[in-house]
Length: 130
Length: 124
Image 1 (tube, each protein chain N blue to C red):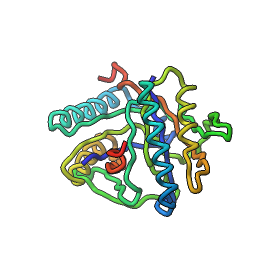
Image 2: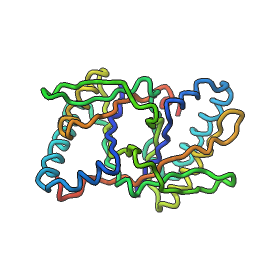
Image 3: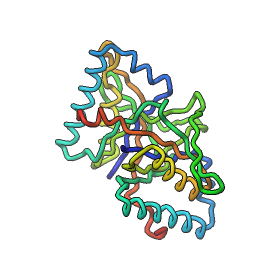
Image 4: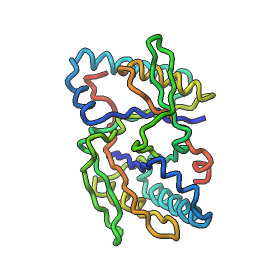
């Protein structure tokens, strides 16, 4: 079963830019280790990190079908910082992996315990909709 | 350059979608399917996924002992990711054009466009 683990942050999440270099290195090293372990177990489908919220754009189609871009988001908006897609045997295993990345080290090496949103991924649209 | 196009909605929005007549849902899915085919033909398609409903979402934190703590309580206003497209395109304008097309097929709903942090991806 495929699950997506989403790491969301507020705009304030850009505070990571103010971390000490060694803390940032420890954090990235931890994430690389998790990915390596998941890949070794055949559970990793993909993992990506996204650019910072200041580069995010919101796009809508105008009446003539042309894209209209906007970069104004509510202060309370959660931005996706990165995600993992995993293929695991049970929801329990997905939660275990989510807990592991939740506890990634932050400033001073203390676990961040950040919330990770976990959702099953659909393998495709229902066949009666194709 | 890789971009992710994120389609998000609230729980109320998802419920409203379920109330659409079947023919409208079919037409909506057909247009999205056509967009995927066009992206595959132009070589810009990387992947797309639809997510299950917000009611199946859980939020997980690691406890001090490393065990997962799950919770399914989200604020009513929370936007849930409904699905995404990853595209590999020549520039941001092209990513916006694709997002505009998806938006036009989906009640002109806003599509969030974000670039991948490729320097991190390389180090993995």
